[in-house]
Amino acid sequence: MMAFLFLALAIVAEVIATSALKASEGFTRLWPSVTVVVGYGLAFYLLALVLRTMPVGIAYAFWAGLGIVLVTLVGILVYGEKPDLPAMLGLAMIVGGVVVIQVFSSVSSH
Image (tube, rainbow, N blue to C red; front, side, top):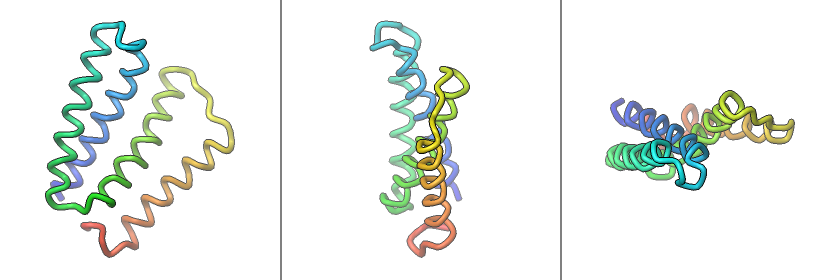
């Protein structure tokens, strides 16, 4: 269960770092740039802890899938980005894939 907590925290740290990456404007703004470095450092540290007990493919599926969806939501809410219908369908398929892994896969650590 701790692996899922660490994974959730890693995903949140990665989403914050990725969102700050846009705000850093190519690392020309100090505090967003610091947020990027600290956020990614924390995210990778937590992911390394997750990989002690969870298969790398499963952990990365959650990391990438949920990270993509959450970063898209940040893009919509913070940066006013508007994904089109194909993008929304793709995001739905990503979420569906993560659900299938968690619910039906025997290699998931649930």
